[in-house]
Amino acid sequence: MAESAACPVFQLGRSRYDQGSFLGRLRHFVDIIDPSTLFVSESRLKESLKLLEDYKHGTLPPGVSDLQLWEAQKIKQWLNQSHNACVNYANRNATKPTPTTKFLQGYVGAVTSAVSIAVGLNILIQKANRLSPATRMIIQRLVPFPAVASANICNVGLMRHNELSEGIDVLDHNGKVVGSSKIAAKHAIAETAFTRVVLPMPIFVLPPIIMSYLERLRFLRSNRRLLLPIHSLVCLVTFGLSLPVAISLFPQMSQIEVSRLEPEIAMATDCKVVTYNKGL
Image (cartoon, rainbow, N blue to C red; front, side, top):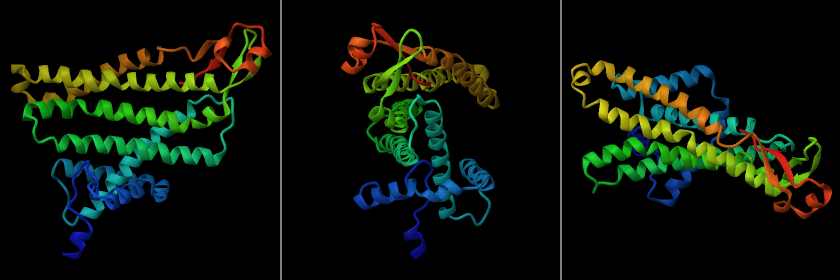
């Protein structure tokens, strides 16, 4: 009984701790940023993913405890947002070196905010008991988009926050550095964040709409085994179309009028327009 009270029954996608209390929320966030997840081995990761898949399909082996399932979910949340954080860091504007301490601060903040937003939105939808079953189903299919979009904005901003304080290099028409601009950094991060909002939009919006139509077809009603491969194909095609569209919204080497930048940059060049690397 004491063990049951200390470790609640596992619920996929939910928090292990009571989100209705301050202490529960505090323990939740401390659990998310637990540094021990940095040392998770590949074999442990595979075991965690398999446990969660077995749970989804109701094929858990005997003896698996709720604690093991909570730990498995914790590892998978960390892996997903850590991947996003590293992508944002690798594709930042690298004209200014980032101190390790600031990178780590940004990493912790990015992972915490991203996972918190995603989990919070899912909990909010699950508590919306006044909605009809049909409405809840549609919203649950669409909720990953605002969750991922919000998390991506936080992830980009926090992983590249050093650019806001240090500025990024701006270049004249000859490619010569004329100064370091914080204003250009704001534009670069805003453009990148907008791209990360547009990127998942087709992926999370179109497949649910398309599948809700296809699932009503008589052919698929009588061949339910085809739903998964068709859904996968729809997602693959959608991603293949959305990726080039999203990254093409802004040029990587963007331009900005010198009159919109800091006065010291205007004094350092005769150019009316300068160029900066916004990152991807």
